[in-house]
Image (cartoon, rainbow, N blue to C red):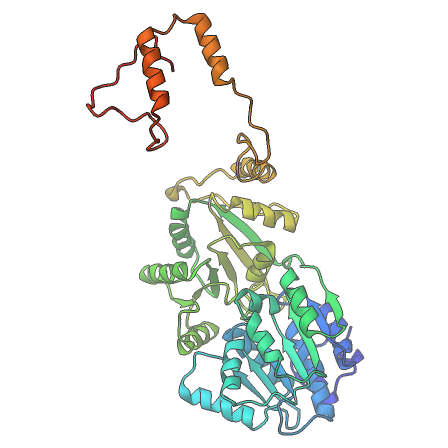
Length: 474
């Protein structure tokens, strides 16, 4: 569908012409008309499908048409990360280029006092659109810096990521300060139970638009190296020495790995910067700017970047660790081969992550090409062992964590011969017990002693080695 087939404001269409946006994506085609009609919308689609434009274009068009209060906040857009908030703000500047008097301010943490005062001033003067991370907006609300009583649009972008980061209570707290007759729009890449519960809480009879997670772009050349964990860093160094890295993103599974890998590659002479949540906002901005400008060849990052970056000329994505699921895999490698370009994606699969990667291959409905390890690095683990691990995992799920050979709760205990039976059986095969031992047994029965501990019978006080005559009872 062409954008001109939608009932958007002419000034918004002029901006789209300048940006060379002509045809809508599926999520835009199905959600923009509903938003223009004033309906609550819940859109489920993966990152990179055009969700930002899907809610910004109709909201800006409605604000430009008029009928909303002046000098008041009319729209709140929630973002899980500072990087995504900045990206939304940049898209906002482009889409509203020709609009008259439509203003916005990005509100996110990690800034100095000057930036905080600028945010405060922008909200108090009534910026039309506020793009904010939950924690920072809560801070302004608690200090009385913002009036949300006239908000007409409440938008949650990447709602699943916000809930994963623990912002559920913050979102509900912000929602309490909004008018009941607002229009609420929720976008998410996945649809877990907690998203459904949130939707029932804050949405009013929403239109649900759900697009299945699509396969990665055909222009992405996917491959994998099956290696041991200790081989990963030498392998990356080998790849970079074979072909000079340029416009590369390496995704890791933790902040510690991000820091260590960036330091190791930098010491090896490569132009690298790191991106993780422990960095101050100014450091993160500087790293992203250097990478965008081409001053840095390799960006080592956690998944914080997977849904918060929009750079069209990424040539290579390396998954240092296998993503948790197929959706994260698509999000990561989707950073390359954008805008019709070609791209490459390499995943390093150690022996523990083979099962996860097999699940990703099932989703892709194909086997990702396994590249041969360089001879100087030695051989990696056999990938065929994954099938055995899968079968073992399925058996473990069926029998439970207690193990198949153990007796389950509620099962009858296997019948054991009674003591009397043992004694009877013993009397048939062994010699009679001496009279002295019978007298000793009666004395013990008449003066029983409490057991000090379970297990071996306590020794006598004289600590002499115990004697075990052949005729004594076992």
